[in-house]
View (tube, rainbow, N blue to C red):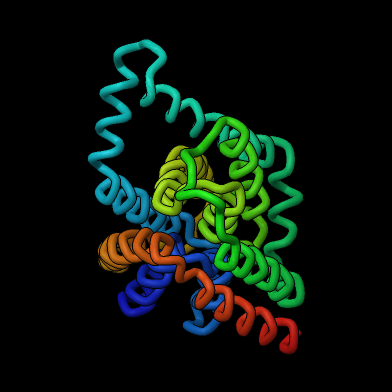
Length: 266
C-alpha cells in the first residue's frame, strides 16, 4: 500500500464511519478501485479505526467527561444511568461477536447482490426516519430503546447496512430527540470498536509470528491515520447537524442509487 492509497482509504474510512452509507462496503469498494490487495492489512485497519475513535472522543469530550465524572461517584445518577444504557445497547453486538462471528464474516465475500440489497434496507430505514414526525420534541434514550438500538447495531455488522444509519434511524423511529439519537449512536460504538481493534491487534501479532509477507510501512500508516482522523472529525460534526436538521433523506437517495447499481452489476 502506497501513501496515496492510504490517504484515499483513510478519507473513506473517516467519512463513512459516521455518515450513514456503510463504511465496510465503501472500504471494500475503495480497495478494489485502488488495486489494494484484497487480503486485509490488519495494521492499517487498526490504525484508521483508532483514528475515528479518537475523533469521536474529541467531538464528544465534554459529554464523555461529564459521564465519567458522574460515574466515579459510584451511585445511581443521570450519568451512571446513561452509561448503563450504553452497556445495555452493547449486549446484542456482543452476542453476535461471540456466537455469530463466522456467520457474519461469511457475508464479506464480494457478494454485490447481497450488499446492494442491504444498501436498499439502509435507504428504507433512512427514508422512514426522515418522514417520521414524533408527536413531541422527542425524548431521551430509554432502557427499552437502548436495547432496540443495540439490536440495530448488531444487524449493521452485515455489509451494506450502515451502523450509524441503522442506529440513528431506529432511535428516531422510537421517538428519541434528534441530537440525542446522534450522540447515543456515536458513543455506543466506542467500546465495541476498541474491543474489536484489540482483537485485531492480537490477530496481527499471531500473524506476524508465522507470516513473512510485507506489511504496510510507517508513512502510509501515518497518512492514513491523519486522513481518517481529520475526515472523521468533519463527518462526526456534520452528521450531528444533519440529524438535527432532518437531512437524512439525501443519504437514503444515495444508498438507493448505489444499492441499485450494485444489484444490476451483480
